[in-house]
Image (cartoon, rainbow, N blue to C red):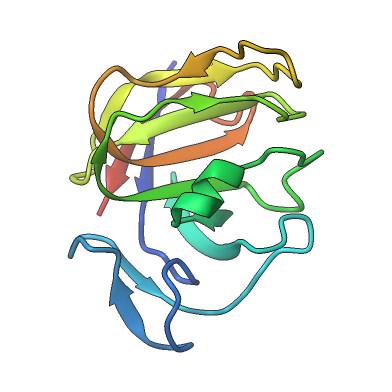
Length: 162
């Protein structure tokens, strides 16, 4: 049986800098963020946020700049106590993800600015330093991506609630 899960992008912690306790949009009014300055021990340089997944709060690292999106989870041996990583783009993109230098298997889900799931959840396999490394994408424009450890989205139907 498929369980319906709502992923709410109500970011309760940092995404786009600013002063703690203030609200700043990520260039789209549907995704408010508040700055906390919080970083994770296992993923230095990334702020954290809380997103709602099926009524549960997921703590995620936030990749909201080109440099952080390029870094992603490369070199990480685990999620450092987090539930995943949220990739935030300023505008719709069709960019693809790869697992080069990524050490743990991950699942990824892509979402439009309106919160609709784009394509299917994709299981990604580490390729280490192999070249060429496969790339993964939904085949259509998206605004957000959420990565979690392999199996994290198994058996769920995802929607994003702005």
